[in-house]
Image 1 (tube, rainbow, N blue to C red):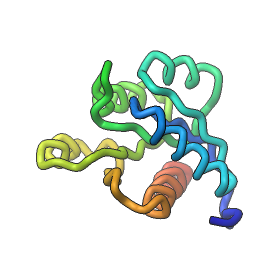
Image 2 (image 1 turned 45 degrees about the vertical axis):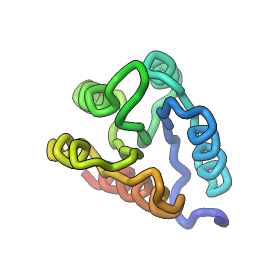
Image 3 (image 1 turned 90 degrees about the vertical axis):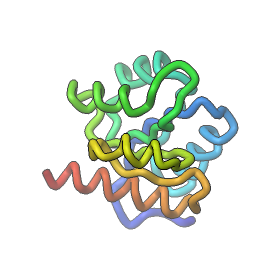
Length: 128
C-alpha cells in the first residue's frame, strides 16, 4: 500500500468497533490520507465541526444511532459530501440501501476495495 496517485482525502470513519475503526484509519494513513475516527454519532458530529471531510466511512448499525439515518441527515445538510457504508451486508441492509445514499462495502472486504470505494465517492462528488 504505497503512496496514492491521487489527491489525499480527509476521511471520517464512524464505527462503534474501536479496534476495526482504528485499523481502518491506520490503513488510510499508510495510503496518504488523513482519517479521523469516531466511535459514536456525537463524537463524529464534533469532528465534523472541526474538519471539512471529503468522504465518510460509516458503519450502518451503530450502538447509539443508525448510520443510514445519520448519513441522510448529514448529506442533506451538506455536512459531508459523500458516504461509503462499511457493514456486514444483510438482505435488510440491501433494501435500506435502495435510497442510494452511498456505496456499500462489506466489512469482510479487502482494504483495497474500501479504499477504491472511498476514492470513487470523493471523485464523483468533486465531478458533480
